[in-house]
Length: 345
Ligand code: GTQ
Image (cartoon, rainbow, N blue to C red; front, side):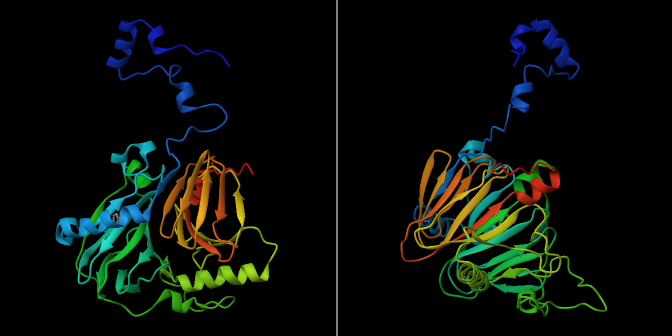
């Protein structure tokens, strides 16, 4: 590889003359923007302990009333990007949101897509496009781009959930904005009831479903049962994994980020293929260890960690008697659409 010329090699008055015309020489920066062989992600392997963040989140509940916060969220920021960027990876944003009994997070809609992974507490709900979705531990609830949503809480204990948004990407695209709106009336219909049985689906003989997103709530009881059935049916299967899809099209549930649930059998250690997208792991149930690049994280329930793209990841169940269940979010749909997806095995 040739040693490329540096900026300092050029006469200062020449560089100045370029700058005056909004011109920049490529060659001093060529290797930075096109590094050899593989990208150099800013995203760092990072672990967020729920035990450490929970008291700080509850403290936010005392310090800032919901009216002053709109969304009471502590952002899980990746230090590799700089905390102020509020990114977990290039395309993913993660936040832990707290809603206290009786509180209401007002209705709005925005261009970034969001999902909620419910972490703890009973009695909260999200109204998405008129569908009132109860929030139970492990449930995945979509708020696709442009749909109205508000969060309410009729229970009597704090409710916490993990928000995953494609905000960093949409913001980078200069396409991020929100609109406030009135409280949304609850409409009839629950996607997960209509799409509830394997192998048989609603047949819109006269009319295709009017909704681009026919299913908004993916109950954990169903995803967990699917993983256990899969594991029982295929004892030799290494990766006991399901993906959250749009049941009408079979495509990824949302356009930009992908969502999955994974079961590790007791004592199982699973090496994941090295792939281009960054990936987030959130432990729903059990105990696990994540080895990401040279880092090693012990995950307790509700812990979250992040792996940069092109990194070697091994997940291990920390129990010899119980399965472990993980929720995963990644940038695969985006990479595929852009044509840059790679799986290096
Ligand atoms: O609940 O609508 O973590 O709009 C960030 C932005 C949550 C939400 C976040 C949001 C929301």
